Length: 124
Image 1 (cartoon, one colour):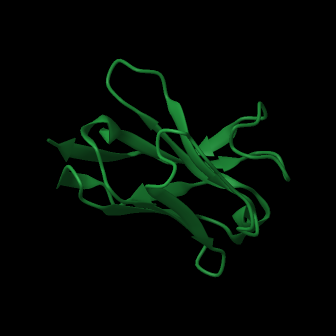
Image 2 (cartoon, rainbow, N blue to C red):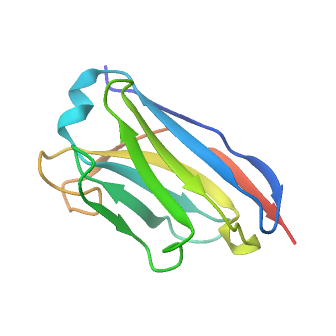
Image 3 (tube, one colour):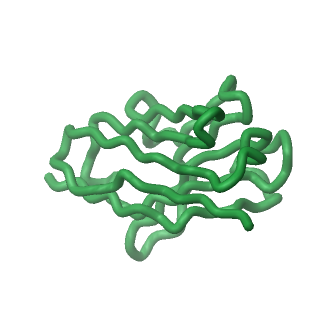
């Protein structure tokens, strides 16, 4: 059974930091790109960051470049999203994602497995 457990959300003031974690249920995920999306109320789910299977390549949305850092520790079956310099517009539910197709990012049309989401709220 495929399961992604994301955690680490919370409420912070603007300029603060959080680190999100995504624990995969199986070591199988080490062969696949993983990443993060977010969805604010009334908005479409949007891409945030992607990391390749071995961690060598990362992709970021323009809105978070320079502030967010994605990383992974395959020994722990875990992907992280370090968020610095948080802004109110970063407020959203953040969802961990794992690509369904080997060698493809989470932005590929092949679709993803999804975590349950963790709420990030940034106050002004």
